[in-house]
Every structure is written in structure tokens, then in C-alpha cells.
Length: 149
Image 1 (cartoon, rainbow, N blue to C red):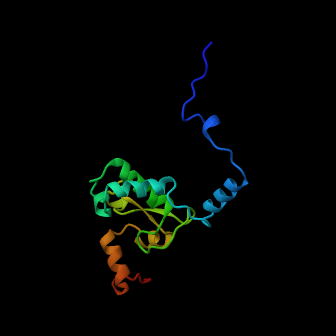
Image 2: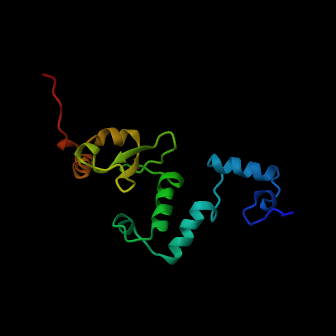
């Protein structure tokens, strides 16, 4: 008779007992009321950044390992989600995906072309090129005003 093979991934034998403290800490962490440093994906991103110094330009120009880029994208979309244009803090409900190069101008729907944005900035950018949208944000007098005819 064969005995079942037990590995490190066997959840029945490797998970510690979870008491009320564990569930309270998880609840507070999920609600954003408790910050835990060094754990999970953020901890992995920190560890990776110790050995591989990188900048945003390295990620955009695809000069990094795929693992590092994936960790950065996860962090950007799930851990500290900020609007790419106005830098307001976003929640899962308020996050929208904006195409940096608009789809109407041939921009792909790939992770390289998508950034998190608030709905206001996403709506204001619409299908404008990025340079035009940023110029209008800096100098509002350059905006084209629609007049009712």
C-alpha cells in the first residue's frame, strides 16, 4: 500500500493554527488600518530592489527581468494605486485603466500601455495624445472651448 506524498505545499500540515489575533490582523490589514512591512508582494518588491536597482525608465524601456517588471506592475495596480496624472490615492472602486496611447490612435491594450487613473483624469484625457493632455493640465487657457452654434 502506498502512503500519500507530503510536501512543503501540503496545506493540511504546514499552516499554523489561526486564532482570533490572526483574523483581526487580517481584517485590519485588508481595510488599510494596519500596515505590515516586509510581507507579501511588497516585501518581495523591496527584496528585489535591494539586488537590482531600477528606475521607472528601466521598466518602461524593458531593460529588466520579467519578474521585476511583474512585481512593479502588481505594486502599481494593487498596493499603492495612484492616479498617473493627478497622483490621488485610488481604491479598487475608483481605479480606471487609461491607455497612454489611445486605442483610437492605434494604441494596444497591453500592460505597457495601461496606467491607473481616476475617472476624472481618464475622462478629461479621452482620446488626446499624452503630451497634449499634460500641456492642457499645466496651461488651462490652451483648452479648446466648444461653443454652441
